[in-house]
Structures are given as structure tokens and as C-alpha cells.
Image (tube, helix red, strand yellow):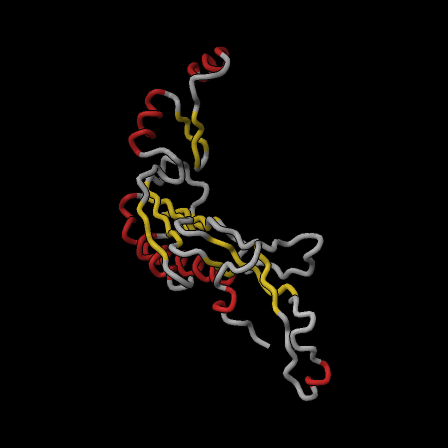
Length: 215
């Protein structure tokens, strides 16, 4: 018996049903890699961020997430090179989908119980997303903007429902705008830390402040 189409599980009808000690025998998620590309690149290397947003309240299967990741990754590598970007899948499929299996072989009517005891067995995994939630993010150089937008446009076809592509005003995957990021670097409140940043406030010990200024 093949997989059911995702339209059977598209809408958030029931409560979240995660894997637990009560819900056992859950199959593995199809998507296992959430960060691809040049993920070790520093925060300075990729100032531009492009996001793919969900425009519906729905469930997205792990198969769809993996298909979108592969599609976008393959297109960007072909157009811009494998070290020109860092892509991150921002949703995780924790919700367990169930199926009430029906027998379709000869003599099944003797064995089947119809809707008696219809609570299904674990069948797959899906991510529950809301309106405006980010599905995928890519950070890159400003020169690659058009390639990233096209990659996310192609990835949209792997998802049900409607999505929007957003070009962020923030610096990379940080929460600061470009102006605030540059100003923070100059006055010492922002320090690059891998592919993210550390933000130092005005509170704390004087000794740690002097140590930071001396460095």
C-alpha cells in the first residue's frame, strides 16, 4: 500500500500529537539535515537574508520539507556555488500523523471492523505551521539576491497552500537591522560570534566591561 496524498493531512484539525512514551513506533522523519551550504561562514560574510513564509495555518509533511530543501540547495549550488550561501530549515516535523489501515485483499470483510476502534497507527511526521511563520531562510551576499529568490520560488512548489518570499532588512540571521549592526560594531556592543552575534548591554560587572574593552 502506497503513501496517502498529503491533502489528507493538510489541515490542523486535531491537537499536536508528538512522539512520546505513549506514542511509540513512530517512523523517522524524512528530513534529517536542517542546515546546508557554508554554515561555518562568519556573520560578516553573508549580510543578506531571504525568507520563505507560510501564508496558511496548516501541516507540512517531512517529505515536503526534504523535497524543498533538495530543490533549493541544488539550484543554488548550480547557479552560485556551494560556498556562496547558508540555508536553514526553520520548522521541524514533530507532529505524528496516524492512519487507520484498511485491508483490501480477498476475504477482508471477515477481518475488518470498519470504524470500530478507528484510532490509527503512527504513519508519518508533519510540521504544524501558522500564518507568517518562516519555513526556510537563506543568508548570502547581496550580489546573489536574485538566485536566492528564484531558489525559494522553486521550493514553494513542494509545499501545499500559499507562501510568500521576504527579503529581510536584518543583517544575516541576526535580529539587528543593518544600521544597528554597523553601529553596534563601532561602539562595541555587538561582537561577531560564529554565524551569529553577541549583544552586550549596559548592565553587569565593571571588571567584565573593562576586560571586554581591553580585548
